[in-house]
Image (cartoon, rainbow, N blue to C red; front, side, top):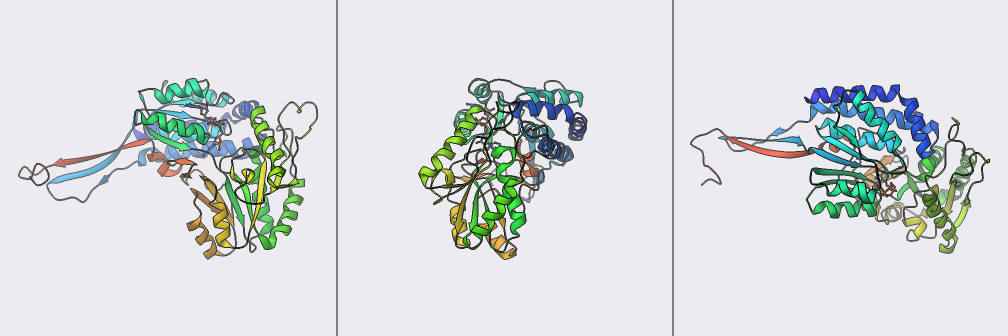
Length: 431
Ligand code: NAD
C-alpha cells in the first residue's frame, strides 16, 4: 500500500474507535475493572490520538542524501521489517495495542498482536475494526494464549523479524536473550519505580494532585506512574497534610460510576504481591501514614481485589518498598535535603523510565532534567505529551523508544545505497 493510503486506513480506524468507544469501554471494563471515567476521558482519546498521529506520519518517513565524494550518489532510506510481533501487558490493553499497531502499519509492516491472557477482548475488537477500516485481512492479527507458549512462539518464529514488547523486566530480558539467537530487532518497554520530586518552592496543591493521580490511577498499575515521592525536608510535614486531605476526597469503588478514580487490582496475584509489600513495610522500618489495608466494599463489588491507596514513609532508598516495582496503589515517601540528594535518591533504583519534578525555579528544573537518569521527565506536570513525545526507557526499564516519530522509525530497517554514475571513478576504496 502507498504510505498515504496506509495513513488513510489509520484515520478511518481512529474514527471507528471513536464511534465504537462505548463497546471498547465495556470490553475493557469487563477485562480490567478500571473506572469508566479513565477509559472515557483518558484512554479512548489517547488511543485515537495515537492512531491519528501515526496516520499523519505514514507518508513522512524520509531518507537522506549524504554528502559524499562526487561520482556516486549515496542515500539512506527506511523499509518495513515485514511481520512484527506486538506483545502486550494487561494494564492498558487498548492503548498498548494502538501504540504498537499504529506505527507498525504506518511504516508498512504487518503485525501479530499478543495481548495478555487477562485482557484479550479489546485487542480482538480492535483487530475487527482494522478490517472495517479497510486494512486488508491478515495485516493485523491477534494471537491469543499464554506468554510461555503463544508469546514464546512469536519470539522464536523465523518469519518475525521485529518484536515490540511491553511488560515486566524479567520477561523483557528473556525475550531479548531469545531474540538474539536470530538477531531480531527488539523494542522493550519494561518496569519502572519512578520518582516525583517536590521542592519547597513548588505549587504544593498542584503537586499533591499530581502525586495522587500519578501514584493511584489504575490502582498504581501504570509503568510511568510515580510510586516514589521525594520531598524536600522543609515541606515534608505540610505536604503530607495536603496529601492526606486530598486523598480523603478520592473516590474508590464502583468503576461504572463517573466519579470513581480508583478501581480494583487486576488479579489476585497482583493484589497479593502488593499486600505483601505493605505487610513487610513496617519490618523494613516504614510507617504507614495512609491506607494499608484491603478495602471492604459492598457485596456486589467485594469479590474484586481492592487495596486502599497506601502511603508509606521509607527509612532509605535502598529498602524494598522504595526500590522495587510494586505495581499497586502504594506510594513510598522519602525526604531529601538538597538537589544533589534528590538526584541521588531518584537515580538509586535499577529502573529509568519516567520522573516528575515540581519547582518554580527554571534553572533548577533544567539541572534536574540533565541529572535524572530516566527516559522522560515532566516538569510541573505529569503524564502529559503523548503521542508526540517519545519515551526512550533507560537502565532496566528497557531499550529502544516508543511513541513520537522516533518510535515510528523503530518499526523500520534502515538501508544505505551508493549508486555510482561516473564510469571513470574508482570501483572501491580508491583502488
Ligand atoms: P508480563 O511481562 O508478565 O507479560 C507481558 C506480556 O508478555 C504478556 O502478554 C505475556 O503473556 C507475555 N509473555 C510472558 N512470557 C513470555 C515469553 N516467554 N515470551 C513472550 N511473551 C511472553 O507483564 P504484565 O504482568 O502483563 O505487565 C506488567 C508489567 O509491565 C509491569 O512490570 C509494568 O511495569 C510493565 N509495563 C511497562 C510499560 C512501559 O511502557 N514501560 C507499560 C505497561 C506495563
